[in-house]
Length: 251
Length: 355
Image (cartoon, rainbow over all chains, first blue to last red; front, side, top):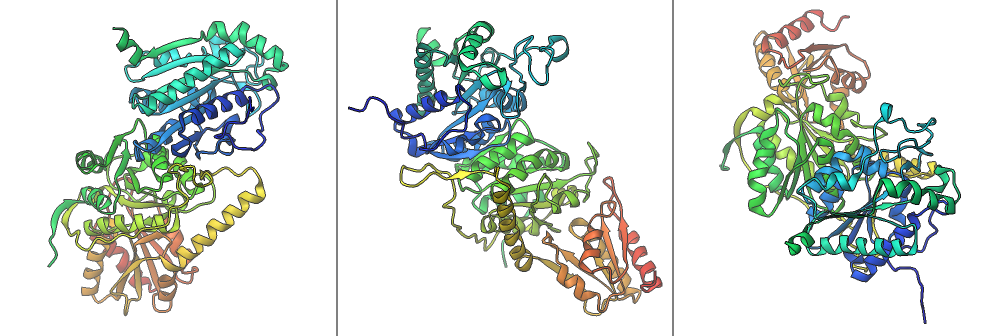
């Protein structure tokens, strides 16, 4: 009996991610959900610019590589090209989604664009070697905040789910993490819901995944998970920030 | 006799795009081309198409990138400052070999510039506009009919060569009303097996991408793209000659400047000056061959353009600097008058090609 296998939607190639990086888990969860929903043949994924830039090689569905931050706009085009037959997701990091592409993020949410957004928040720029991100924590040491993020000089981190929850547009916003088995299970449930919402025509669904970057945080994978629990989770509380359909049912 | 309707240039572009099978339009308001968006906003919902006002030109061009990735005809339109914003996306489209029609109804610059007509985005259009080695096919209409015809042709050329195409007009052309006919609209079907439409689990996944981390691969991509460009240069250059048979002076002008120049040429002819015009219809590829050929009989070329002298460089390259090329220009939203062009022609006639 097979108890564990590679999801079909995940390509049979080695991933380039660093040891201990949580991208691999999140890729797997997305692929498992695509398998379970039986949508690989109609899914189009959008890869960002950042560590997951080569996600287009890792998923077996059709893929598009977008310019930095522009994934939600590209996804808007992909979805509106054939709304009945295209399932479209973006996979974006914090620099991509919350800095360069903030306008695209906010407006696709405001339009309730019927797409699924997987937002990986690890509070740092990984691909370029560890610079301050829009989600880097106050005091966090990075290559471009070597004395710690000074909020007087460079402002405060952006809490994406909280911010987007103020809009009337989006259907579903949830923040999850993949730091332990329990949270990985919850993350998968959220990702699945974000795809199901699209299938059911409900609209913009974003899952923020609080993640680690052991390499650029300068920590071992285990220490990185501890740092996430001690520093990231208090600043970025997990939970559902918006679920319009559930809210309506509850009324 | 074909049925003709009176239309603004901007509206003619929009209607022609629909006739060419374009069902997706994305744009952001900017003067002087908003009629295109307004027309699309009215028409698209009635024919099952998509009109979407994007949050920015940047978003609009990336929505275009998305639809084009799925193999469908798609367009955006803007004016000069907006084209600068779109240029990031245009570069990505060129790098991913994606077709689309991009309309630039030019206004004066640089910066916010003005809202009056200009041709000062010539370099931007013919040199690719964004970063990296690439070209756009650049079409320059000089009548409302041509705005319609070149819009349709633009979609075909984009699909044929898998590249973005720019329709380069100006504020006057966009606002000008002329009779236009949409008879005999024919468009072709092109192979789009590269498109992302969902694998249906029946084929290997398609990837739309412009990233090549291995320099050998990126070089190969660039070489291959420029092989295609060579083919375009050989086959697709378009121009119109006016009274060139016995011309000793050749005016080169496109768009609205060519309309003005034509009046000036007629007036000069009445004075007995042998002057004609080569009007480039494609600015890239630039119609080099007729210009080089004209150097046999022509002693002076005059570039009439609404910029500080951008096309003049292409004329010098095309004619291999065998003859002097004079500049007759107005900028900042000013259009040269026929008298100003006539003065340049007279001056050239007097000098007779002597420097």
